[in-house]
Length: 291
Image 1 (tube, rainbow, N blue to C red):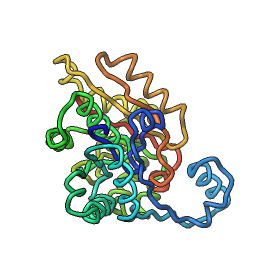
Image 2 (image 1 turned 180 degrees about the vertical axis):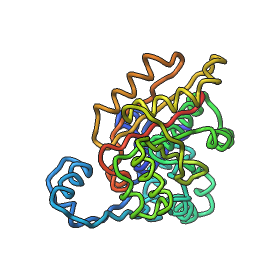
Image 3 (image 1 turned 60 degrees about the horizontal axis):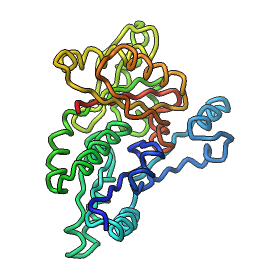
Image 4 (image 1 turned 180 degrees about the horizontal axis):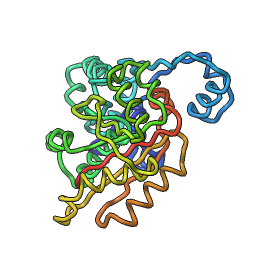
């Protein structure tokens, strides 16, 4: 039996190769959008673009995995591993963390002691970076109690920034306030690009930039925020996710690799379909932390 197995929810946006290599079990999130699900497209973003063309005005709805979904995942990992570590999307925007805790309680007194649940207070590649650090600690031979403590210290140090083509999706879902959505719209009207940030588990204003395009805007944000750490020869790990616009994601990745010495690119991946209904097509998200 192996020592520690990982469970994450789909919104961590981990690439398939990382999932398979580390035997991670991914718990899916649920989406309901009947009008769009039947439209042509290889992913939700392509379907959303088609919905825009057809003038469909409805919005997708998401719901957290049920405790049963997590229970199934925990039981699967407990057959292989001595202990299980579960990393979830922020509890401030989703009930996923609570579903995982409920599932743990259903395991019974003996098995629940073998399962540990951590709220990432982040989303997308921000949650993904926390899961990657957990993998690092497992590979270093740390015990699970020590890993949980390390992750809890790391959570405030994982930074996520995003730039979106349209904020109506986030606004309609209630993940950002009407005030914040209007701030984004006002910034665009005066010719600047607003940056959205996840801070303490919630989506908030992260600043503005006059960059010529989205990748440049996020690159500048990363460069400024990591300047002190890089000057101290600290190593930075980044991850990038995108809303079916690989070109801008690859451009951002190349800028980072070419210009920021000591920065490691962990992965680049499509934003999962369910989170996609919240951020919309052409969204670009960058998360980073010191390692």
